[in-house]
Picture 1 (cartoon, rainbow, N blue to C red):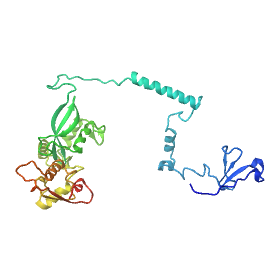
Picture 2: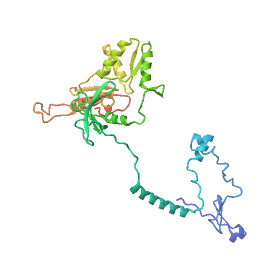
Picture 3: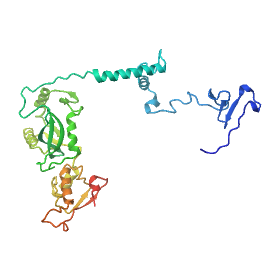
Length: 344
């Protein structure tokens, strides 16, 4: 609070008529002293703001509110259900009583009488061997990221995959996995996932696709777009397709790609290559804007080998702990990455 002089009281005791008894506070507003909570009146010479002056052109919450289009006005009108702003026939207290009783009855009904949606359960016509309903089953699979395969172990319950982990017998990740690998299980339950063949955004069929292939694939100008893959099966299919249709072109694209790495190896060695580093045996590591511990396709193996080079094994009788050294990491990058955060 700040110290201000008390306002002067002007009223009947100062010679004003009793009917015009007023309390003037700093000249800003005038309040009737007979009933100070009845009304607040502005002085006659003050220009009080009105609804017309505070129009939507002065105060608005969004561009639609400022433009006041017919669609926006209709949306404002239908924001709440019909009759929500009206209270017909009942006062507020009765309305709250009825709503409280309704919520209590709805809670009791939901707890004891709720009907769940019906589902048709289809049993196995011939149950597979070693399969018990409700018992998790694990199987080995693989997943490609920018052409680098990762061995995975998927846990499935009644035919529904629920967990993805690394395969300890795979040479790339050696049983480890990262956040990207763990999130791949969500792709199977993505509601936006395509459920049918599409042609120009319209649902098509396998029969129509085969008819299109019979007429269009022999022609020149055929282009095929796919993700990078190290799958031998996909590689064999690509070789047979390009041999049968010499005019076809095969393109690969991935959102998280290593194009800069391929271009650099092409400059250095004459052809694009994918380097495979043995970081566990490296003593000095220099990275030029390469986040090989996080975003690299082989990041899981790189992180494992990098951690092994940082570890001093005091239990190894063949190596003296005092003579063991950790690797050194030097990073030059334009933005902070996980690899840069581990630099020395």
